[in-house]
Length: 366
Ligand SMILES: *Cc1c(COP(=O)(O)O)cnc(C)c1O
Image (cartoon, rainbow, N blue to C red; front, side):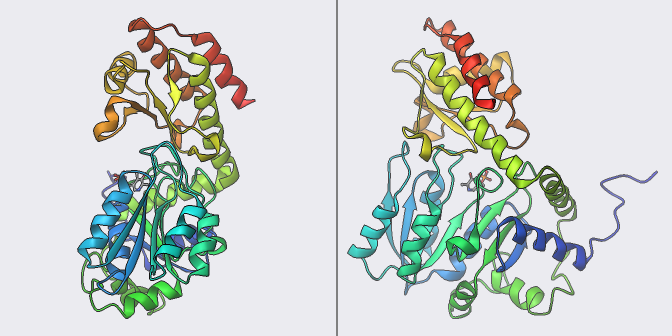
C-alpha cells in the first residue's frame, strides 16, 4: 500500500516555481520570491548576512524579541547598529524613524518586525517605508506574524527584503519560509564580499543557481512535505479569500480585547492603543500580584488545547498571550480562552464578569 507521506513522486521545478509565484501574489510583489527550505529564521538570518557588513549602518527597530536577534546578527556582520527600542505596549512611529535618520544620516539599512506575535503590537510599515525610501536605505521587514492576519504589501510599501513563514496566520507549516528580494537588495548582496556564498544561508546561491537559470533545475532536493503543505495552505487561503482570512484575525483580536476588558478582574490589554494591537495575537496584562505564567497554567489545566501562553523571559510575570491565529482565529477559541482566563482569575479570588466577557466578544463578531 502506498503511504501518503512517503511514497511521493519528486516535486518538480515547475511546481516549486508555481508556489513561489503564488507567494509573490500573496505579498503583492513583482520582486523575486525565494522559498527557503527551513523555518523563517533561515531567510531572516540569510537576508541580514547577505546585505549587512562592516561598511553599513543599520537602524534596528526593537518592538519585541526578534528585533533583539536581528541586532545581534547585524553586529556580528560588522555593521554599526543603532537600536531604536520602544516599550512593548506600543508600536514604533514613522516620526521616531525619521528622527533617527536625522540624527544618523549614514543609516543605509532598516530592520523592522511588522507584527509581533510575542508582544502583540503591529508597526506602521507603510508610513515607515516612506521615510526609508526617502533616505534610500534598504528596508528589511519580518512579516512572519502579519502575513495572513493583516495586509502585507511589499511593492506598495517599498520593502526590499520581506520574510514570511506559514506557521502563524497562514495556518501552515513551519518548515519552509520565503523572502522577497528587490533589485536593490540583490545589488547590495552581490557587492557584499561577506555575503554568504555556497552556504545554506545564501540567497545569492538561489539567485545564481535557480532564478538566473529561469527556475528550470532545483539546486538541491526540496523539503518536499513542507512544500506540499505550503501549497495546500495557499490553496486554502485562495479558496477562502485573503480578505476573509484577514477579517477572521482582525475580529478575533477585537473580540479578545473587548472580552478581556469586559471580564475585569484587573486584566487589561497589554497594547494600550487598539490601532497598535496586532490582529495575529492579543497580549493581556495581569493585575498586580497575579503572575501571568501561573494564571496561564491554571487556564491550560482546564483546557490544554487553548492557544494561551505567558510572555517570554521577564514578561512571563505580567503578560498573557492569546495566540488566536490560523485555525484558532475563531469565535469558539476566543470564547474558550476568555472563559478559561475568567475561571482562573476567579480561582485566585478576583471578581470577574464571564457573561459580560462572552457578550462583548460575541458582539465583536457581529
Ligand atoms: C513566529 C515568528 C517568527 C518565527 O520564529 P519562531 O520562533 O520559529 O516561531 C519570526 N518572526 C516573528 C515576528 C514571529 O512572530
